[in-house]
Amino acid sequence: MLQVFTNSWALFVGMFMLMVGNGLQGTLLGLRGEVEGFSTLSLSIVMSAYFLGFLFSSRYTPQLIRRVGHVRVFAALGSMVSAVLISYPVLVDPWAWSVGRVIIGFCFCGLYITAESWLNDASSNENRGKSLSLYMIVQMAGIVFAQWIVTTGDISGYVLFIIPSILVSLAFAPVLLSVKPMPAFEATKPMKIRDLIEASPLACVGMFMLGGVFSAQFGMSAVYGSRVGLSVAEVSFFVSSIYISALVLQYPIGWISDRMDRRVLIIWVSLLGAAGSMIAFLLPGSFVLIVVSGAIVGGTSNPLYALLIAYANDYLEREDMAAASAGLLFINGVGAIMGPLTVGLMMDVIGNNGFWLFTGLLMFAVGAWGIYRSTQRSRSDLDIEEQVPYALVSAASTSVAAELAQEAYTYEEEQLTNDPS
Image (tube, rainbow, N blue to C red; front, side):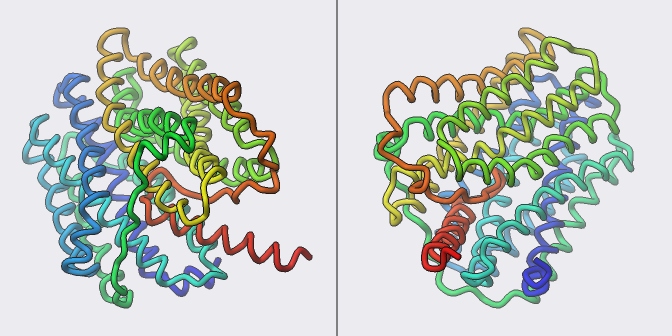
């Protein structure tokens, strides 16, 4: 792992600073919106806007890269992110923030695609899996570190908005000055959604539901925390618990998934996440239980993301896996756009605990759909040994990372096949 970091340290350092900026602006806007008196619905529109931009970028950034190259795209998108971040405290208006979030969502997706392409190019077959693992650790560490920064300043001031802008600006230097130029970029053509649904209805429906869960966590957890009266430090700790548990539980759940019926595991993980949501919903008012619920939902929903990709790949030819991953990520993005809007509406109608009811219902729906699909498709024709390897993919990644992960774990599988000892 140390050698992997040494070989691509500039990329990892740059991505860490970018993730700090991204994690900070999401939490900060939720808290600042409360100070400014924005309604829950207004904030939900602001938070949904990020995922709208992210979804469009997943389609159009590859075209920009092919037209002008990785370096120019990375520099241009990063500059726009820095400018938008510093404009938030100047343009304190829900609609202005929504436009800014669309732009930032578009730019961050483009930055991820560019960085993941560089990472893929810098990695060999032997270390690609380690590179991806370190990339995911850097992503989560950046978001968690951002939550600590939130506690160091005044939410109603300007400084906390300037910090992420500076970090994003500084992130360009090590990457653009140290990473070699990329070869021609070839984006994966997504599989038709109809074909993807026919291949794995469970993965498609599950991904749509998870999009809502992820966007609620990333966009509305700080809003929920401020609405129920948590302090800035408590909100920071609560949001951090979501991402720490997501990182910690990825590996054991992935290990288990390669050794049992993956659909059964999807069902149990989903229902565990639903039960975690119900803890805070049925027993409101306790900060400890809020953190426990956040950790359970975060620790189950993020591994479930990679589980569903692996499950879909079980029924696909190897040459179709990358295209299927891109399609599943697109479905997830559509669900993510709907998430904050629905959460905001539920919080307005039934109260702040609508946040937990929303995530609980979606996680339960994934498990219930898995049970139903068990009655429609038998797994008896697929031995556990024939399952594709679980590929470690973060919900903050793009289809480039999904393809990179599949290449890494396919290589490891081939090595084990050729040398069982």
